[in-house]
Image (cartoon, rainbow, N blue to C red; front, top):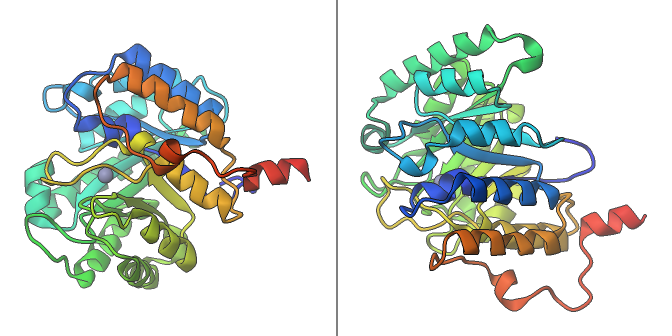
Length: 317
Ligand code: ZN
């Protein structure tokens, strides 16, 4: 993370947001979206997933989006991979960051990725070996995302011990870092704190910096504040709160990027993002997906009168 920001906002809308939306967004529109968000100051975007196009046709153009995004100066281009083959493609395309999800709930893992924990960890080991062969300047960062870490729509409560165990296993298998994902929107602020502390105790603070939250039960921004309090510094969000998870029935969108940026900037935490410009990006997405519901309180209510963001204040110093 650059020192000119306090919190890294990672946009996951083009992947997590779109994957549950059946109406295809054109590659051209996705490029406009990514370009506009980067221009607003967003420093990291998960632009797609190297998943089978048959499984998720919406994400079939990920390679082209990566190629486009790599031409944007200063943008960290991230992609999800479900398996070794996906990682091969991601590396070939030159992404900066690869994330592989591991569902802490094994039932969800089987349903989502068709893999047991042992099989998935084996895949992680093979991917880590592949990444080690990439020359350093081009070598992507490798994150293992602990999905359903806060609870599973199929299994119900997920024991903290299991999350910690799998965090250790992912690190041992060769990940650079792990992330906590509330795939199902079951999490609460107390849980965010205790889970973060437990995983830190096992893998070390620098190997867990980020959290991925959904707003399914309205706890999203409260969970962000808990994450900031405990000391996490990267937060995933989706423009307009698009998204959900096809294998977690009932799970609605990610936390809303615009509301997250407002929260952070209002609290004096610099994101480097121009919120007015960010709000304007909604129009691109709305026009590309007519009829699709975009969420966001700040977009609905407008910015408070006289609002000056922390990033803007820092620039004026
Ligand atoms: Zn998600």
